[in-house]
Length: 396
Image 1 (cartoon, helix red, strand yellow):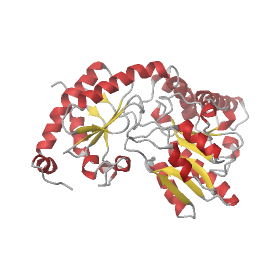
Image 2: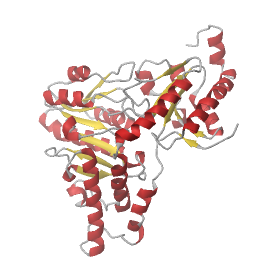
Image 3: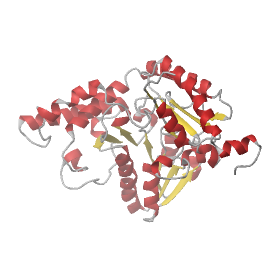
Image 4: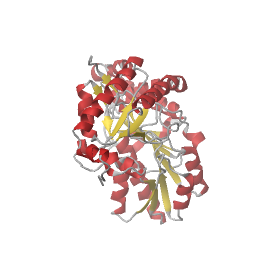
């Protein structure tokens, strides 16, 4: 069978677009001024930074003064959680609420805070991968400083009821943060209408370069300095601005948030075709709610195989994807996300995540559907787990 190249791992990272690259290039050579300098070269760089800030703000329904540039989404998450706790702990609020299936940028930060005297409540998720606003409400206490629930899950793509969760938080007088790294550019977001107090995003998920992100902080919320040493980012994050990357983020988010609904019609149709085609393979299941999910995300568990082997075999067929298995990160444990929705270890190890965009063709979709059964059959033929399953033996 013909081998082709199909990139279906856009949730991991995206290609820098031609539009973004062209916008960035002048700031490496001709517009290279330090944005803190007062001569024209510096003023031009500062203008470029502020123009990008306006674009990011407009994409979120925020004010430019509420946008702070960071190096990535993880940094933005850290700043939101640690900064809020540092401020609110002085008022006796030493408790935060998050969910069990957040990105590790949130979970590891929460674990760090636990070691420093902060209590954390981890609310569960349903077997469809959804957080209940009622569970969040019940978890909030008098001493709760912050609730942080991701907008859309990075593995199974489920979209959370953010507006309802934000309303619960405000009813209780608690700040609400959301990690929207996977959601920005794929879902219409208006931070004011949705009641979001803080929001994290990352450029490399929307065709900007790696190493640039932003944190939205609602006016009236004062976070402590993230980095000391200079007046950049309104005295909150010292360090010479990465002007090319900031410019690129502005262009990328403007493009990504244009005509979202129109783009999602085509992407969702292709995603559903992939889901239906792959589920024809026996002993497979879709992870996460079918409808309340990102348009380009599908995560399917395939029993009797191991995720890392699946990825390597797919790569031989020219398909870039990812798995629910964490083996590639040096861990033998399966994904915490898949375990949180009730999957057994053995099933969670054999999961496939495809994250597509509108540039994937109908032929690409059919190619994936056609080669996957052959790959699965080969892997199952070598799997002792599959052999036990076929004999009706337990593999617990």
